[in-house]
Length: 379
Image (tube, rainbow, N blue to C red; front, side, top):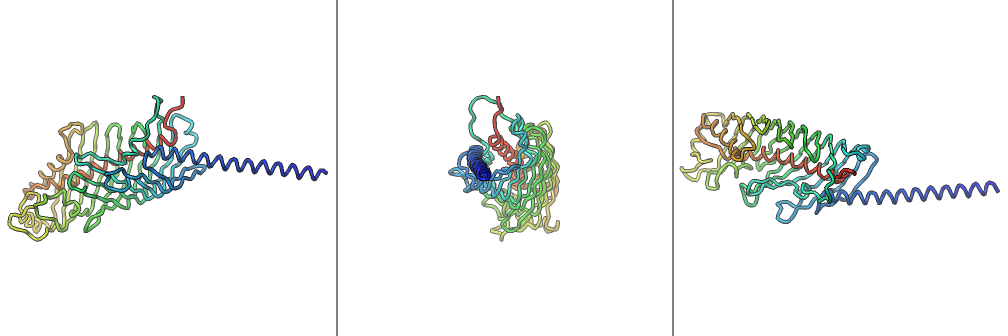
């Protein structure tokens, strides 16, 4: 008799445990569903996530994609094979959310420079969903953002129609100490990438820090063996002689403090060759083609120019592209007496827009995490 009661009690306990387990599974599935909806809300319209995994210490998104709007030069504005977010669980209950790391595996980002020179990066993500009421936004601090094997495509409509595509591959990057939405404090970063070309691939290395809120920064930029054929729309007019091959190296050490820019640097153009001449009046960047060829013969096929960029970045009359072009033209004139304004504008665009994209991308990540992890302070 006692054994029968014991068996019944065991069965009841087992049934209760099964009910609790099933309830926990259903509750967990419901929570994952709610979190998935919150992720899509944070990422904005036209976004999708193939799989969302929630572990005790991390949230993992697989198959992230944000489709581009009509008229965008690429099919997607953003996608990633995998995104792993490691938050501090205790901080989720406070007014200051702490995220230990965000790791993005095989990300892709497309950016558009419009005809008027404005840079657009992941517009849907940066816009973010509208919030009701006037509750103050909760601060999100991300200790480290890591990009592994990334791709960036910059479409530049200022130099060509359809827009010229500049592609960076094999991007390895890290950004530390990002605070959203204020974007105050120094966010340190470093990046390496392959710069795709038509005839050769170059390398890019960028490192330093930036404070987006104050615009202060200290950045070192290095380009090696970047293909001049790819940059041809920045170099010459359509009626001028064409570049058949060539490479560009750039070293730039820039600092912005209290809106004042100072950036000493050096540009080296090497292995420059032109297509066959179409006549004695052929020019390259407004200079007689023959004069450039003769100079290169006497300088081991290299043109080296030292320059310093200086100016007030808040002055509407100060344009980085034009300042860069002026300094390069001055330096080159000492050796050759010609201007390479197009090269300056092209390289200046890459440097300037790269920094803008870094700031905008960090802003977008912070905004999305702010929405995902609880975007408003609790009352």
